[in-house]
Length: 282
Ligand code: ATR
Image 1: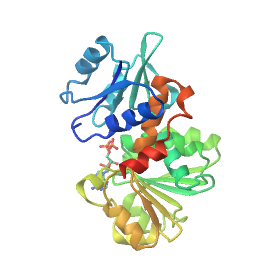
Image 2: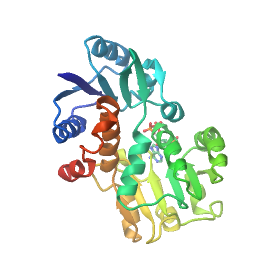
Image 3: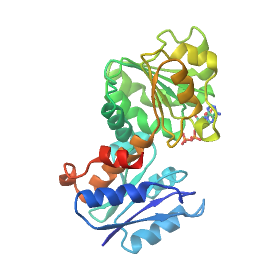
Image 4: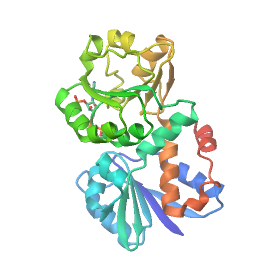
């Protein structure tokens, strides 16, 4: 049996084992997929042991995505751009790091009928979660993408990193502070799509004030929170202003589907049905 695992800390509540078992069943394959909880400074050791024992692939979640990038012997272009790795596989004897988070987000949005082409998009947050999805979002050719963060330097640095990609796609990429969203700095509000990539939802808080919410949401907006399993405060603010909302469960399932196909081969893409797995989890 080929062995896979997800590594994170904490990891007990991860849905990844269940998701991958369902993909295996759908494609009539047998795999073993387990959970690993390395110590906070123990990712490298755990990954070495896992692959030395014959492990075929690993998903990596909080807080090890940078450790996984360092561990990989080769990086896919999108992992390089994302600055983080969520999927490790073996290719020609080398451990390859990839990042399927952004592709997962984009596919979930498209499946929910959200077109990003020509859209005005606001991304909240400038940490690893935001960086991981910016490339795939820009590939969808939005008209404008504003990256807003609590602290300005991180947003500025991230915009700097992606400005070449944005200019080759002839779209506007700008950084802002969250409090700017209240004033005149942002002229194109309300936004078609607002993506919360901050860690605020985990503390049951919204990254934005109610008056900012008044500015950025209209009934035509769609608010997406990468956190899953709850209606977050940001989703509530959006709902109160008539916008449609989604949590991040679909992104989780879709990024898992990409990882499954990296490991098992793209010939299984027709056999697995991520939307059915998502319905089962809801
Ligand atoms: P991740 O890898 O999950 O993105 P991170 O790199 O620590 O984690 O980044 C967390 C992000 O959430 C940052 O953009 C952070 O804002 P700062 O850069 O200003 O710290 C944001 N964040 C966390 N808690 C927040 C809160 N309560 N309100 C607004 N933003 C918050």
